[in-house]
Image 1 (cartoon, rainbow, N blue to C red):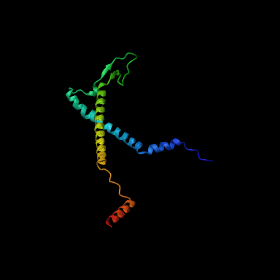
Image 2: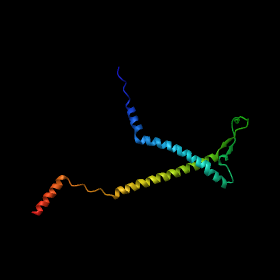
Image 3: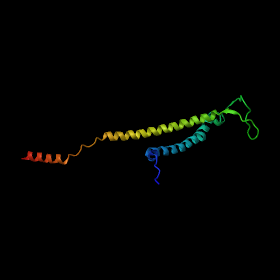
Image 4: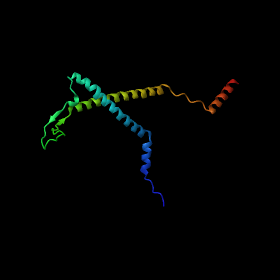
Length: 151
């Protein structure tokens, strides 16, 4: 009984998954998710309370616009109170500020990396390659020429 033949795409997938680019992308995604949590906390726990001071103590998460219900009955919570249909404007503003902080940090990170890359390119361009060493044949011909000059 012969072993079933493995599809060709499996080898291609393994080569892709093991490549440095795919692994770097995976690591970047994981770090990005963790960094997103940090910026969300920075926005919600540090920046928004400071902004609220200047806005008269308004808690941005409480900024909501209640919309009317046109059809059906309103849902009730456990206490029997009507759950309002709201546009959560404050949460949206927090998300926008969170995005802007994250975009700003990524911008400066990319800018710094580009500076390092440019600096390394300039170093490579500044140092021209040394001229190639003469071959053994050229050395021998030079010695013969010098000996003929001396005679």
